Length: 290
Image (cartoon, rainbow, N blue to C red; front, side, top):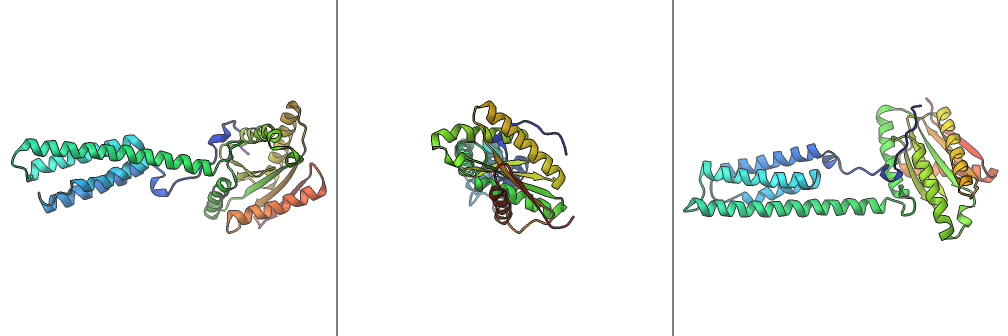
């Protein structure tokens, strides 16, 4: 297993956007192709009717997928294209100045469209992150973790490499009052997030249960990781003056289930067996054959 790296747990496992807008260069390229299409139609139809307003579409695409800079750049490109078309193919204005003035005005409106679209995308991303982030620990909640786990299921279908799902139950945490539990919960989330690899994902799926997905990790290595995590949790909690025991349930998937929720349900059953056996217990399960 590769060496573990420390990192900020708040930045882990952010759910991806749609494939079209996953890459800023790709998004800008799609918007540029759309702008070329509008320019081609504008050239074919001549100076009447005008298709300048339709450049708003590539501007919106660029701003949504490539951000504020991409939206402004596309607005300027669209304005330059409209201006060039007018000079090369003619325009319906009796003089040059009114044509230039109107084109510059439309370009300004396109810039505003790009700015507003980029702002809307930023607000959408913030809202999306909020609904998928645990407010106490700043790591993923159950919804965010399920989405991240779904990505791992898709990856396994392509590459057929095992992965392990680890659930950590914090014994006694649910018995604490909400204010008393906040500090240890935050510490547990921080410890788990800082103790795994960047390719792993950590989430808080219940009040006293945390989940970790370990991509490309089979049973033996997963057991080592689980023991390392429990040791670190024990050390940190004792240092904090809040000794606590931790039950672990591990499921190594050689053959993944159809959905992330099914994977979590199986892991929760294994964790339940560990909890029934007593405190500080570990139970494991391997699903499928190598």
